[in-house]
Picture 1 (spheres, rainbow, N blue to C red):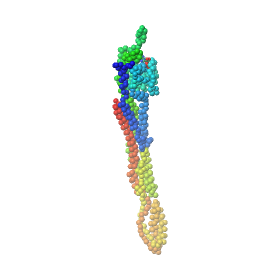
Picture 2 (cartoon, rainbow, N blue to C red):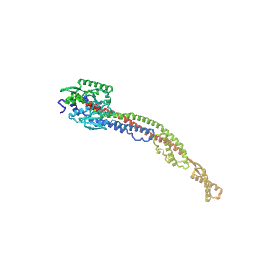
Picture 3 (cartoon, rainbow, N blue to C red):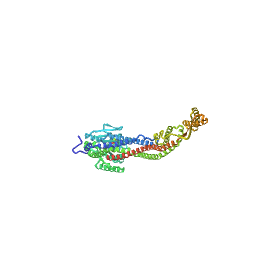
Picture 4 (cartoon, rainbow, N blue to C red):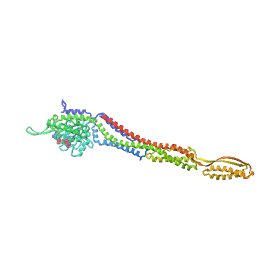
Length: 590
Ligand SMILES: Nc1nc2c(ncn2[C@@H]2O[C@H](COP(=O)(O)OP(=O)(O)OP(=O)(O)O)[C@@H](O)[C@H]2O)c(=O)[nH]1
Ligand SMILES: [Mg+2]
C-alpha cells in the first residue's frame, strides 16, 4: 500500500514537491564562471611586463623593488589556490551533490539524529522512493546498506548520509560535544556544505541553545534552521486483555505546544543575542519516531506523532534552502575571492606599489640634477687632458692618433662619471655620439718665420758644385738648431743657406771664377709645430657635443624609470579595475 491518499498528506506533498525543486540554476553557473574568469584574468594581468626593466642594474634599489613586487604578487597568487584548498572537503561535497539539496541533521549526542534519518528513509521507501545510505571515508562518499546505528550510547563516529529520492541529502553527523574531539572537527568541515539545518533537540531537555554556537557560520550565511523536538513520547502502563503492558504514547498536545513555543523563543533570543537573523528559525515541531515505528498503522500514526507538521516544515526549509543553494556556488566563490584575492591585494600589493611610486619619483628627480652635473664634470676632465694629449702627438703630427685616443678617453671619462652618478643604471654612452672624425678639426700647424734670401750662381759648374756642398753641410747644421722642424724643414733651410754661401765663395774667387748671377728670394721657414687651432676646434666641438651625449645617457636612464613607473601605474589600474569589476559581478549574483 502506498501513503498517497485522495487528499495528499503533508508527507506526500513534501515528497512530490521535492521532485520539482531546482537546486541549481544554469544562471548561477554563468555567475560562477564569470567569477572564475575574473580571477584568471586578474592573474594574467598581474604578470609583470617586461620581465626585466632594461637599463636597470639587478642589484640596484629600483630593481630590488621590482623583484619585491614580483615576489609579493607571486605569493598572493599562490595564496589564492591555498585559500581554495582549505575549503576542500566542503567544496568537494558541494560539487559531488551539485544538483541536490543538503540538510544537516545536527544536535547533541543521543538526540536521536540517526534514528530520525533512518525513519525518514523508511518513509521515503514506503512511498516507493529510492533511498541510498552512504558514509564518507577520506573525503569520498561510499555507498552502504542502511540503516544507521541507533544506540543509547554514542553511536555515530563518522559523517554519514542518506539520499532521499533523487534531490535531497540528509547529513547525519556525530553528536555535538562528542567524546572524541576529532568527530567535532570532522563535523565542522562538512557543515559548511549544508543548505539548511535540522536542529534536533530531545524533549527530555529541549532547547539547549548553546548548541547553536556551533552553527554560527551556517546561520551567518542565512541558512534556514528547523528545530525538531525528538522523542516527544512517554511510556505509560496500560491494561490489555487483563495484562499490564507498557505503551508508548505521544506527549500531550499541550505539552508539545509548550515545548515548541519555549524552543522557538530561546532560539530566536539566542540568534538575536549573537547578532544573527532570528527570522532564520522556523516553527519548531515536536515528533516521536518511535511512536510511529511501534504503531501497527504507521501511516495513520504520523499525524499524531507530529510528522505531518514536520513534513510541512521540511517543505518550507527545503524551499528556502534551494534559494540558498542557487546562490551558494556564487556566494562561496565570492567570499573566497574577497578573502583570498582582494584582501591580500589591498594589504600587500597596494602598499608595495606606493613605495615603488615614491622611489621612482625620487629617481627621476635625481636624474634631473644628474645630467648637467655629469655634463660639466666630464667636459672639465676631458678639456683638462686635451693639451697634454695634443702635446704628445705634436712631434708626429698624427691627427688620426689624436682622434682615436681622444675618442677613447671621452668615452671612458663619461662612463666613469655615469657609473659614479648613475650607479643604479646599466646604460652606456653611445660612443658614436662623441666620435671624432679624422680631418674634422684640421691638422697641426707649422710655426714659420719669413726671411729674404739672395741667391747667387756661377756660370762655371765646378764652383757651383763646391758651393753647393758647403751649403748643404751648413744648412744641415742650421736645420738642427730648430728642434721639431723635421727633415723637410732642415733640407729647405740647408738649400737656402747653401745658395747664400755660394754667393760668398764666388766673391772670394773674384772675376776669375766665372760669371756671377744674383737673385733674391723670400722664404717662409718652419721653426716649430702649433696645436692652438686644433685645440680650439676640438674643445669647441666637445663643448657643443658632450653635454648632449651625456644628456642622452641620462635620458635613457629616465626611460628606464618611466618604464618602472608605467608598470606600477598599470598594476594599480589592474587592481582598481578588478575590484570595480568584482563589485559589479557581486551585484549580478544578488
Ligand atoms: N523514546 C524515544 N527514543 C528514541 C527516539 N528516537 C531515538 N530514540 C533513542 O535514542 C537513542 C539515541 O538515538 P540515536 O539515533 O542513535 O541518536 P544520535 O543522535 O544519532 O546519537 P549519536 O550518534 O551518538 O550522536 C537510541 O537509544 C534510540 O533508540 C524516539 O522517538 N523516542
Ligand atoms: Mg547517531
